[in-house]
Length: 350
Image (tube, rainbow, N blue to C red; front, side):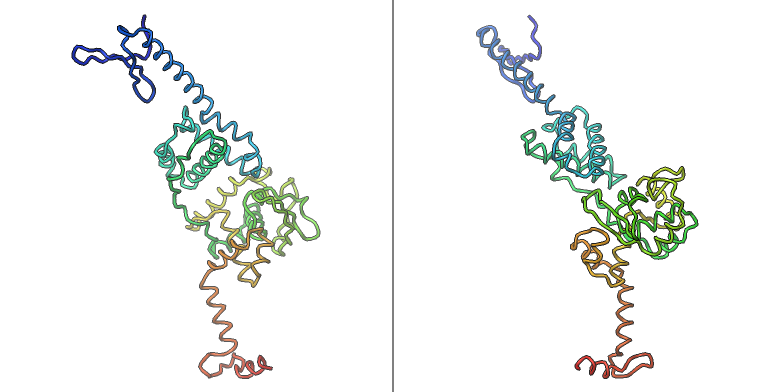
């Protein structure tokens, strides 16, 4: 009788029999001297193999992804996040086809990152998504540890605000669709997805209502006069405020392409999210408090404070010198354009 997965090894005059498991060889009794023991051990190994196969099929990466997408953890995410995570984790599954949560190793995750090194932001998002899947799986005993822990993100830098000459050119662009989009992004200070989703119906009494997709926050943002003038001159041909060349709702991808092409013409690299940082900087430079700025953008106070520390140093320094010059030179000499510092000090004391 021919049995599968049996390996025989001869050493001198003796012959040894092994069962070829997935990870190791299992020594079997000698069938010539202990046929019953041989068959019992062989049957036990076969049962173990079937059980392992069933567990692996149940714990396959694709099966786990399907369960994760149906879980309350996943469904509690913002709709935009669900969509992004869904696309990213499906790409991970394609790269690791046939794998299970138990068989994926750190080197597999690192290889995934290396294959996507040309698009570092995407690679980082794939890593973050896979890490989220493992956190969910570990909490339900589908996995024991995450192979993503020791894998580092690529350095993609921060989303920088648009340089002033570039921003000025965009705000004055003859391309009405692009100019409208830039002004909506800048003067509301919202994320790309939220700007693309804004509708004409959300505007009333000089305010535009926004429900942030990422945070769920509901904001009422006063419409800046520059934006109001732009919107007043825009025919309402679609449900959304922003449209593409075909007159249908504009997507984030379209805006990204427009912005990249515009920046390339001016010899710089810019992204739509940079306008959100421009908005924060302009609000802070205008003298708005952290709380006032956060009321527009919907960001946390901590993040606004972080941005505040990074405001263009040159502009702030110029304002400081201007204020200094208004109240005195510090040398005791008075400039024709400078108020008498002694008089000012007396007024303060009184």
